[in-house]
Image (cartoon, rainbow, N blue to C red; front, side, top):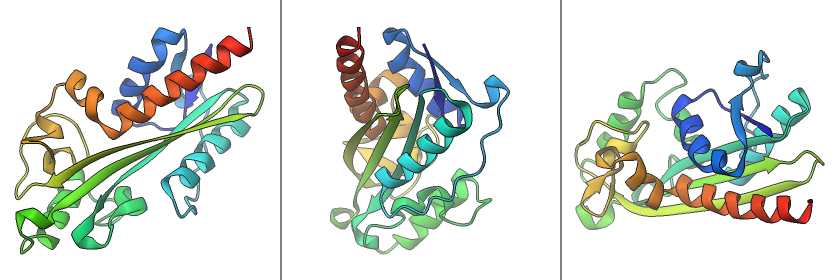
Length: 199
């Protein structure tokens, strides 16, 4: 079975493939199917609402089961920012490095004990019959004082889980503890139930 991943982020696609492939699901982007998805106005006030908007738009456009993720970083010392604006933090065209350097600059005078933060991933899957599965995963951590590590993407170099940044973890280590890894395992469990009940 083919599922449309409502993202052109190749690193997100790889994470989804690692979870979905064992279920016999082929994860593809709309572009790989020759379809261009329209930009979705992320007007939701939560990660879950935005994930649904993206998945539903992809489902309506392609007619295929669709999966979308909306995720972000919430920093306690910044009253939960950047939150649902994580991807656009620092401006629409800001690079990953520009975004996390802006974040570090905003936290420059914040002591270690107040640098608590969490990554949240909300996933919405619209199934062939139009029903939906929604899952969420959270990983608690801290914001580092400077970037470290070469892996990952986005804010991974400045998000500490224990004494390592996300960017210092292998793909397997990150999957085991990350917000998206948790949300995807919940999705896998719900999909298994769905497929078993629709045999």
